[in-house]
Length: 251
Ligand code: FPP
Figure: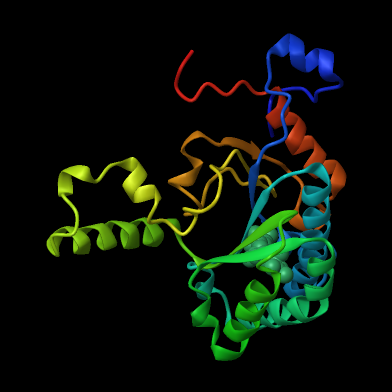
C-alpha cells in the first residue's frame, strides 16, 4: 500500500535522510482475520485462532527488535456489534491464550498492561486479565498493551470529564488545561509517545484507535491479512519507519 520502495541497506536510508531508528512504541490494528478464514472456506473463528498465533509472533519480533511498547487493538468498543457467537469465540480465545501464554510472557520479560474497559467481559475474564497484569508487572523487556473494549473518543471524553470535575471542584484552574494536562489523563499517560501505527489487511483508516496518541505517529498500511503477519511483514513496516523523516510539523 505504501508507495515508498523497500529499503535495502543503511546507505539508502542515509541517502533518503530517514531516521534509521527502531520505534520505541508501535501500535497495531490487527485486521483481516475474517477474510483470511473466508479465503480458505473456514469459519471466522479459524481466522481469529490463526490471528492469535500472529499475536504470539508479533510479541516475539517486537521484543527481539528492542521495541519498548507494543499496543494491540484486540477488541474495539464497536466490536460488540458482532454476533454473540463471534464475541464468545473471541473472548474464549483470549481466555485460552492467557492461560497458555502467561508462562511464556513471564519468560520473555513481557509486562502486560490493559487499556479500554475489560470489565465488560465479565468477572471471570476480567480477573484472569488482572492476574496477568499483576504477575507480569515487574517485567521490563517489552510492555504489551492490550486494548480491550477500547474506543479512543471515549478515552478522550473521560479525560476531559475528569479535568472538568477537577475544575468545578476548584482543584485546577481551567486556564491551566493544556495538551499535556489532557495527555496525562489518558490511559496511555505512562507510555512513550506512539511512533509507528500499523494496520493490516489493506484498510486505510484509524477506526477510533489512539486518535490523540497518533498525532505525530508514522502510519503504515499493509495489505497482509493479520493471520499472515510474520517477522517479514513486521520487518517491512519497521523499514518504512526507518526511512521516514520525522519532522513533527517543522521543516
Ligand atoms: C480483525 O479481524 C480482528 C479482530 C476483531 C480482533 C483481533 C483478535 C485476535 C487477533 C484474536 C486473538 C486476540 C488475542 C489478544 C489473543 P476481522 O474479524 O475484523 O477481519 P475481517 O475484517 O477480515 O472480517
